[in-house]
Length: 399
Ligand code: NAD
Ligand code: MG
Image (cartoon, rainbow, N blue to C red; front, side, top):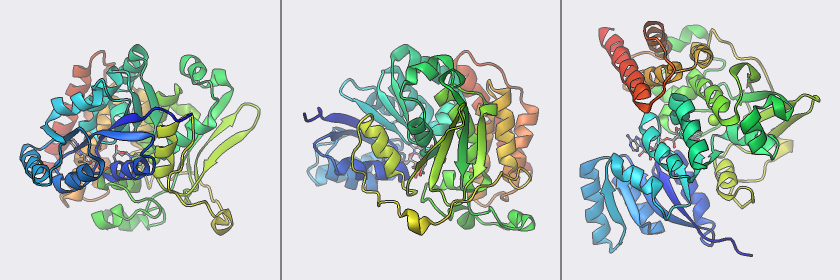
């Protein structure tokens, strides 16, 4: 039997994940219809996407970009309605006609629209890991209350999800240990600076940091991968997604990025998910789950892969990973402080205002000076986020 057509909102349609999502959706017009596409300000690409997918709504964060898009779409005879701003992002995330929301805005900007989708009980395909890092507890409560289905897009978490038992409700209620899981092995490529001499790290450029050996991604996550903050954020993400504690998650360097993560059970079995490093695999998996659909990803040539290497991460080389592990242990608003300081530091590094090694210094400064609390409201998370941003910016200005 043909499944009913699903209506999809893509938050962050013009980004790396957004573009890959539209690629998968375009392969299955019988299954998926785009309901809304959103972006920050890149209206030209959004216009092209609207002309191809004919969504009901297009939303831009930036007001003048929204006017440009409206003019362009009218000129082309496209009926997509253009909206602007945060309330519009929340509207298309929570709209009654939407079945699934791809949450692929980068950074803290994605928190409120993603939460709106969760509160409306949608199937939420979560790429925006920062939202869960900032407000994991409140996010999880909202999922439980609304009955939203949260499916991981991050390749590691999607791999872990595929290797975990099918009875999600068991481990979500009782924790991974109760499902016979000993630990999660979270793999990391080690990024472009895995073997760079330590003395050279202060001199690396944004271009070098963004040249990831295996994955093509947005700028912010590329820098996070180079500093391994990305793996730190993913550690925190895994704890919330799979109801586990940081000590049950072991970070493993695996430079080939063929194994996307593993799960070890108490009987000694280790299950892994393998594939080419192409985000269309986890996107297609989550879109169709529990079914399987074509993603356009090439077949994995295991013979050409030839070897798979593993090593432990060097915390001296990657202090951001250590800082994230510490924030994960402290919990409460510590991950929100870490995330906010990191966003400010990464933006300053990309703008050539600070050196690569100063990213960790900014985060350390913020985490040492601001106390974490156990947040009971979103306002507390947002104020931790704002305080951390202010302190990080102040330090950067003083340099
Ligand atoms: P990207 O920079 O390529 O795209 C970001 C998208 O968010 C764009 O569409 C942009 O317009 C939108 N956006 C940015 N700021 C916004 C704002 N203030 N308001 C509204 N929209 C805004 O990023 P990406 O690489 O696609 O990553 C998106 C998310 O997915 C990130 O959280 C990242 O960590 C996660 N992720 C990405 C990959 C990957 O392969 N790219 C893999 C795993 C997880
Ligand atoms: Mg990842």
